[in-house]
Image (cartoon, rainbow, N blue to C red; front, side, top):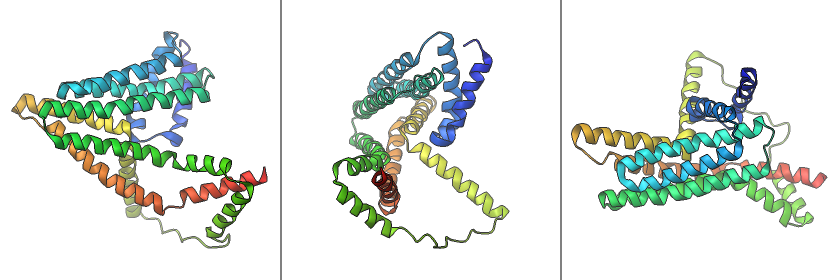
Length: 290
């Protein structure tokens, strides 16, 4: 891409999408670095298919290297970070060239599924070969369960909507719509009064917001990859300086305990929320009018 103005337009568009799909790692690392890779790919005349292939290859290499102990986990996590970056690059190139499509989105999901499904078994096998202990092995499978549950919770509303809108007869859809509408608050129901603004409260709100953003980022697969990379790097440094091992195993176990907390908290919050009911009610209303 020789035209700097053209790249600035691409860059501005991608940053504008941050509010819809970004998290802490996206803003601080993923988006700035991936935009430079996109610039390089466009200069070389490569398209979104080349970026998708790079995404899949780096991800599978990273997963395979997890079986080779701390150095393998460190280098493998580095390849998974590249996989994470190429996940942005293929979309950026596709949107820039007007090639964004449903087929591209499906291919992207397949890439994620293959790499994420390969990562955890390879990591579990590598840790078991390295220290011959069962606890890190169990911890990795807890992390895998959390990864799958996180995907399920993200896709559950769409799956329910698709099933309800296509499978059930019109009469049953109308009954569901009316029952869901009864649970919603009356139109004139007053909401809670906003708390008076203050410097201390604003500071606490910013702190809570930052913690929430970090938590969302750290519970994603990309967040797990980067935390694993830092754990492997620390394991190598401690092993070199103090001849002590076990940091990577401790890191994985800590991440697994954190995952158990998130499984309980997210699941309970999700069950108690009205997210699915409200969205389904809205879709049923729209569907009944068509």
